[in-house]
Amino acid sequence: MTARQYEVAVRAEAELGEGPTWDADSGRLLWIDILGARIHTYDPVCGRRSVRTTPQHVGAVKPRAGGGLVLNLRDGVGLLDADGGFRWLRHEPVPGRRANDAAVAPDGSLWAGTMRYDEAPGGGTLSRLTGDGSVEVILDDVAVSNGTGWSPDGRLMYYIDSPTRRIDVFDHEGGRVANRRPFVTIEDGAGFPDGLTVDAEGCVWVALWEGAAVRRYTPAGELDRVIPLPVPRVTACAFAGPDLTDLYITTARVGLASPPPLSGSLFVVPGAGKGLAQPAFAG
Image (tube, rainbow, N blue to C red; front, side):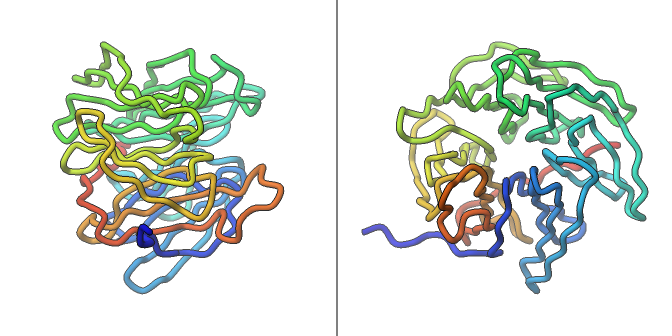
């Protein structure tokens, strides 16, 4: 029997928990409930928690270099200042579409994903935004834009469009990607890849929606660790804490007729590995 690797960091009932992100300046973990329109914070040292509502569904939240947060919202990307002031960086509402996962690249740009509420193929995008509001559509034929991350040297970008069951990898240089190819394909019955993070050794950790687990793959695409969880809908993972050694994992309860008791909670695997320091959005 495999020993339990996880602990419950925050017992919650998030409808669609997502996007754990370590905010090094504040010493807090940020995570969201997309459909609950809430931003959660958690201080792993003292256990203090806070919850803030957003005016619409929020797909991702990331720290900004000058303080405050950047939000990937249903109708575009917005900036939340440290004093609570809000303004749109890019306001582009599309009926039937919402924001989903996002990530900050090594150069400080935001790579923001979208998807249709009905998850129709081709209804989503992946776009690159800079601090002046400039936007470039990187991918325009996506169903469920999800996990995005970069290798330690920044030369590779990993990306998930969940219904494909693949983690893809691109060559990355100067904010451009090329040579898309499969990195890992998740086998039938093991769930769908959702959020991902890359560790200091260049290994890719991926959360499995309907797979009740997080997996770690080596840079060669070989499976070398599985962390089983007591809930089916595992959504995302990220390293956090002062030493970036603890793996935090978000989960969801949306769509489950009889959710297991811990569905929607935030989990942690202490000492799981060593994460990469994540850049803040340069805007």
